[in-house]
Amino acid sequence: MVEKSSNENFFIGLSLSNSSNYDSSVCVLDRNSRIILLDKFYFTQDIELFFNNSPYVHNSIVCVSVPYDNSLLDGKWRIHSKNYKMLGDYFKINRQKWTKRLSNRLCEFLLNLKEEGLNVFRCDVNQLRRGYGLCANYLARTSLDCKDLQTSLRIKFNFDELPENMLAASSLEAIICAMFAKYVSFGGQAPELYEFDGIKVLSKPF
Image 1 (cartoon, rainbow, N blue to C red):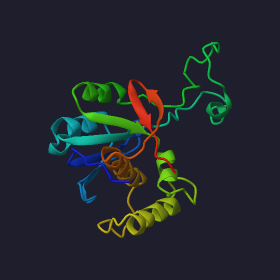
Image 2 (cartoon, helix red, strand yellow):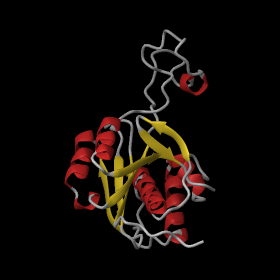
Image 3 (cartoon, rainbow, N blue to C red):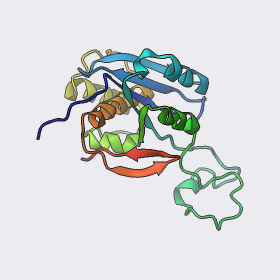
């Protein structure tokens, strides 16, 4: 099977957190899969500023992770309720939207970028890790998990430029998102999982 060519020169991955209390990261890869930018953001305004002003955004394809909404309830069931409560409009007392699994942070901005012509889609980071054979051998986002993931990226995918000191979890996830953006750009199979606020969420086959 001959790999399709790509019209994009840059492949951008954004690991998005659900609020400014946690770090988000952006990674930019070139056509040779070299990391030319890896940066962290906290505030939504800073992320928007990057997409509005960075020269890499032009002639690029963007993959943005869908963050999970981990806001807590008031009461003793606040930790486990989201995992077990079925979704449904019939449940009238969820005034804090505690059945909501996903965060819609930055959705409107990303949809505007798409309408302006930017090639943008979304992904589930956990699914991507499985698709690339980077499954978590330890509790997700712990020090051991990040070290294992960073080592795997360096050895399996030849990211020799990664430092010896441990990167943030969001930075490692942004690299995976950028890898997926390049994969999609070059015509790789990426079935649609679902659509989230007007943007397709794609998956990486195993």
